[in-house]
Image (cartoon, rainbow, N blue to C red):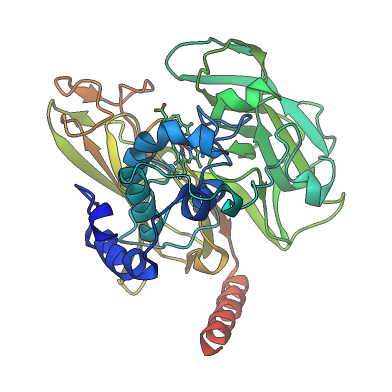
Length: 444
Ligand code: HEC
């Protein structure tokens, strides 16, 4: 086995360790599609690489997979596929929607491809995964039909072009008749072609509360590795019957014209009159326009062939539970991190993305007991790093000066956090409950 798996530029000592510990020890037989690789692809790739999915090819059978084996190995080795751009050496590593491969799985895929991608005994192939019906709302299996569905204005996605980033507003007047609490949301392209071209996007409700203050929140987010957002029981997002929905949709052409595509957002509400214990804004934009000390980078100047980092901090005025992290920069963006500086001065790296890629807007959803619970007065520090050199594979031209702007070739920086603000009592209770769970789990 050993000679099969000494890949030329294996990523790290970690991989090599896994390689010598696991793969070599495990057995003497060759790694085959049927016995080893199919299970990995079913689990980690098929949600996108299926006939209805956003992946450019289906990877559900040996016949489909075989021609792609060298490219699969290349993308997997570089951790470009599955798309998961998190730095796996620092910060929280437990996420609800983690689609990444572990070191052993990566090693297996590389070894298999180097050995000519053998099929093995077809009878040993695990059953194909049960893929959700792309024409149905995935949350409807547990929540029933949504309370309302809103649609984006139509947009024709051409057959062959660069990916397209499209922003429009629709009115939200008359969709609900009184303020209501949202329980869950889901966003998808229309079936069948829309679901293939809608790579990711979000529908943001921009309305005003009874005092005329802005009250915005997501009524749909389509991202990686999941089909909807459901708040935990007892947590809701209050929406008002006014304003507009801002559609922010990223399309990837699929070699076939998709005329008048309309993205759809479905919303499930709590019953009328119900008041959840925890109120969330769903996702909050963290940058200068939402308070002093943020980081929007509107004074950024990035000289040709340079690397630069900027930092900004925000102080939490109330205790908070952070449920997700979604970094945003453009083509020169390379890394972004979120650190907590606690009131006692201690610091903790919460999460860091080190392979940022503008064409993927991934929402990293912390696993329940890993989600940061932060006391009032904690400072959140965002650090963004841009790489305007030729080393950055996404850089269209390292000879350019780059400044702030809306286009992908301009730059910006901000962060979307899933955040629920808490009272002191709620903070103490959630902390105690979590500690009890963690103690019980470690005692078992
Ligand atoms: C969240 C959806 C998603 C998941 C999960 C995913 N892919 Fe992909 N994959 C895509 C999309 C979209 C593209 C095309 C755009 C791109 O390359 O970023 C792609 C591109 C690729 C390509 C390059 C194809 C080409 O023509 O350049 C390979 C190879 C690939 N994926 C393999 C995999 C493998 C193997 C896995 C699992 C280990 C996987 N992908 C998981 C969505 C996904």
